[in-house]
Image (cartoon, rainbow, N blue to C red; front, side, top):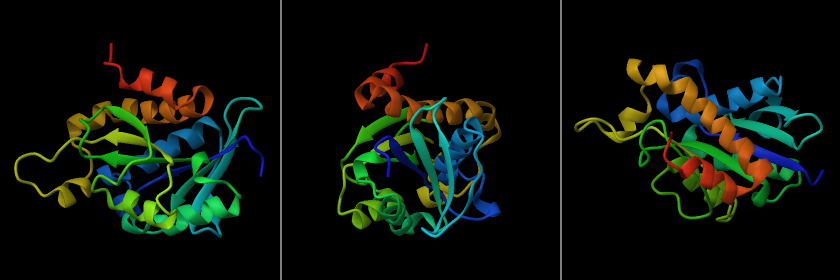
Length: 195
């Protein structure tokens, strides 16, 4: 496979009933990336829905993958995509929701533990603890005593939905910045306070 290929996996749960959940914000970011590349998702033998395109004219190839499995079983489909395209985890970007980051903020990192995120935990297990890059999309903590498991499986609030398109666009911009400018430069851009 060409050296200038990246796999971007957006975490979430399959099915229309989950599409608007906070847990599915990673897949929402992939929808934005696919739209920018005029690419469509289709079935793939890796147990993902896959869309392929290029970043800009003649730019790097992006393989966007949405696992057909539930969030907690994201590792198998992610590892299968890497194997299918003969790529190492250093060419993998995983986009996912993050409770420990305030809503409407993006944080980028490579490597590290799962931080309690079961989708990341499963990918780490399936890839042997690989150092892949993560675009962590902040969804904030649940209000009051609402269990986190219930909070992530609910749709964004009405107030959040007003800002959500910007957050999704920021997530897509972050993926593009990692690929074109490198992780350190992208971190400087997205970890700085918003103007």
